[in-house]
Image (cartoon, rainbow, N blue to C red):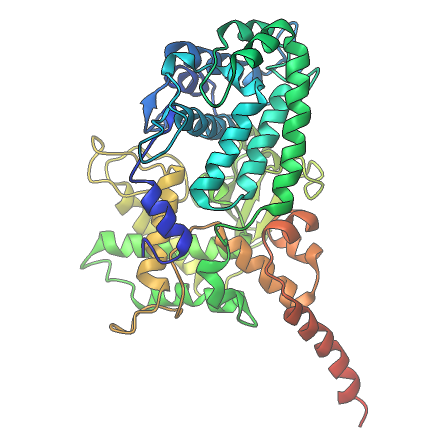
Length: 486
């Protein structure tokens, strides 16, 4: 299962030779910023070699600039970073500097730059970006949209007036040449006219970004793992078979209470995701209150930036409610600054399973651990060995294990719900929902309603709507004419 697709095989081979640099001071700065949706969260585990101290401090200054609630005095800024975005940028930049400092004759085939020559000012030199995107091209064999995103990041740092690099001429003092990448003449020119150098590089990376978009290829097909589902006429009906498989193989809670609790949690993960189309973050941070207790005020949820599942006696049903601030695309026109609210339908034993999970299975999973107040909790044998709160990686692994155990059909055991399915994460459920609604209605707008997104975003990232699917919808409408012409 680790090499079931070409991309996974490439990724497995690439992980054998780690080269990225990490930024401990910059990461500590991110951790010091309160994240209302994560209480008592662990610091992210970083893998790699620590960056030089001066480079780390410069990256910390960039993080402070982009994460400050108010733009620092004397600077202009466009947009800001939340902790997840800041961590992602550190990872991306760590790969760049790791490639620059890796030995040219080693397995990474880097630039062999001495570590003392690394500085943030290098990002203002066009030769660095040209070398990096060409290095990634040699490594993969083609360009991808990842290179385009990196060039757009470079442009945001260099943009006249609002870019952090263009407003920080003192950084040029640490600029040093790198053989084959940055010449002494480029260093002298940048130190002589920093503003002009940043503007020149800004124009160059924007040009390269457009070139990459034109020639980029798809390295990882996001639909490959769930193709047997998406190719079905009713994808949601096919995917929901996994939930039926979980119920069919549900262990006896008296004989094995932990296994029964994990199976109940797996069923509810799948069903709530299918009904709501929420992203992984919103699912794992979904809170729950005691049955009969009043729901948490929306203002409190907005401060926490997470949602809640509660039972509403007036609607006689379970309600999922989230403030717009809890969503990744909170400023989207979909929300119009209004909260999200959905009554879960009582289909397929859902309500009985929610009641059993809260009354029986969730306490088993918690044991002696501190209750994080989230609906989904992990199982840990003792408080010393772990926390009940799901992190991003934990939730992904849990979902992948559900698919491996219950979703993938095994011809030798006869177990598993869907033949040809591959391991995947919770984000693919959004693809299933979007594709199902488009196949049934032909409307990107209605599909966007299911996953809380705009039609343009859905068409670009989620839906797999091929020409024959479009022709089938048109034929279905035209067939009504012939059926009524008798």
